[in-house]
Image (cartoon, rainbow, N blue to C red; front, side, top):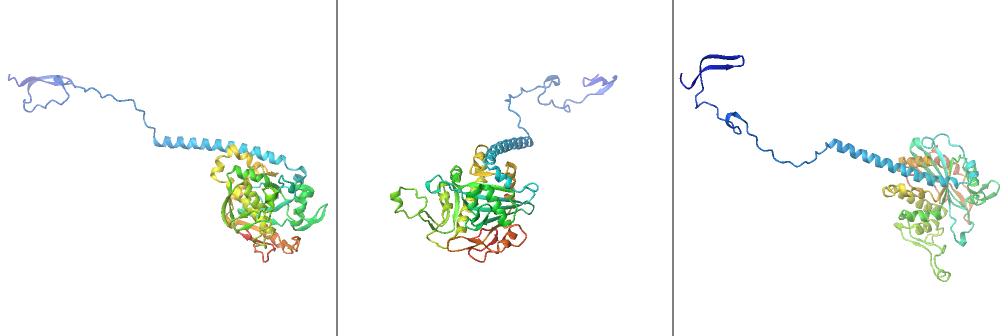
Length: 390
């Protein structure tokens, strides 16, 4: 038998004898690389790999990041609420029980029903000239209308002569001096015919410390001011030659002391036409600047630590939830939905006078029953939409 022939074939079931031509040496398949003799596969030594951790999927990273942010926000909100609630609780305790009894009941939640809030500004500075003073230097009604995203302000001249229950005819700011917030609530109710649901008493003296704690406020001064010689900060000899407080025109940053002086100015020697309305506008500018600073991102970030001190200058019946609701209504009300109104008075040479006959129409504008109309005279009543009255 030739050497290149085999006498059998190999099958899985056995073998069959016979001549089976074997492939020639030239046609045999070459050995594959990596195989040794007899078809044994040769394995290369595996390369050494360091144990690096597997990178987590990007979706898991995003979810974990969002979860951490939500937890941090929840912790910030809870800490801020309790800090703010502690300060509000102290503000509620400072309110006279007689003032709380004089308020009208709130029909529904402040977040969904209209409310009238009386804001009284006092300035009992610890100096000899102001010892014992409890007059309300500024009197303003704030009406919130959540359904229409509307906020309205009604300024009442403090030198307006009205009938004060139990006192008689006197300037309206004497109601606070004679009977505190309770008598002021009843007097404003009798003057306007509107129910007073809440009251806020703001002490401008404490505003100084609050403004300093906030790092100052920015106020746009509409025109140059040179005041008279009130609250002179120098010695008696130097005050005799002192010309008064000076404020330049334009936007300027003020600390607590200077902002307080700006709100107290009664006489501008550069403009003798200024009235009590001008002074109220300055006080409102300071208040608005403080509110803007309180709602800034930098201030809110420190809320868990400072929120309790924010309400130190005020005394109120409003609860924590109601103040937060009022802030939300203010946030939702756009510039065109903010109404600035004032009552008028027939002021005489002494700067006092009886209420104007057109005040009833202005009150109708204030509550939204009539379209706003601008004042037609210097001391006349009226309303402006989207900007303050000059």
